[in-house]
Amino acid sequence: MSCNKPASSVEQNTSEIKSDEFELVTANPWQALKAFTDARIALGRAGSSLPTQAHLQFQLDHAKARDAVLTPLDYSALIGRLAGFNLGVQHLQSQAGSRAEYLQRPDLGRRLNKASYETLANHNSAYDIALVVTEGLSSRAISENAEALLAALIPKLKGLALSIAPIVVVEQGRVGVGDDVAQALGVKMVAILVGERPGLSSPDSLGIYFTYQSYPGIEEAKRNCLSNIRQAGMSAEDAAFRLSYLIEQANKLGYSGVALKDKSQMASAKVGKNFLLPEAP
Image (cartoon, rainbow, N blue to C red):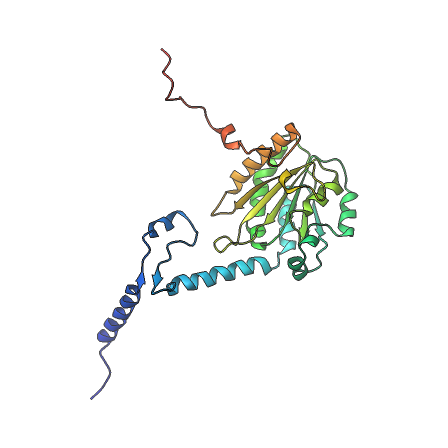
């Protein structure tokens, strides 16, 4: 007698096993909130542990974060795209000679090497603002978001009648390297686009740090920051609008940082009727 079960019986048993697996997972009552955030919430549980699906997703997201940090940025492709803005591009290097040194010595990523600094100093022409691009801790953030951000920002800067220095691309740079760029070029303002430290749900997040009258060693409180610029976060258009507002205000007031508040949304909002006041006769 054959011990093989009919196909229909095997399929039925398989579906029962899958059904049993799902029954082992206790759902979290906050599960509906997952529709509003990428945060790791309402994962449920299997006994006292995470469900297998949530555990595997964590491992995948962790791998994406590591890749964002360690994957080299394609500088040739980036510079080719940035050349389309017709501002010129300077390709420079921080004092960190390798990715390993960059990760182990944050201080070296904050300064240009000697040759790069001298190259910029030869282009000192009293520009109003310098735009710096560096991979920071996420090459993916730069490759996916930098061009779109600059495409939205540069026309706004030209509309403010600001002179823009050649775009500076720095290998292995951190936020502070923008201060060296500002000093070498003699610019009044600097904005650096940098790949942010990747989270487990945002390996592609771009940050912008803007500083008025920057210099090496300036206090962090004198910077303004826009964060989480990516397709699933703040859009390039919104970031460009906010940054151009900060730049315009800093140029008028003569300072940036904690004293300069982002009131761009208030400035653009239409004044509506106040329901607390009686209507005019």
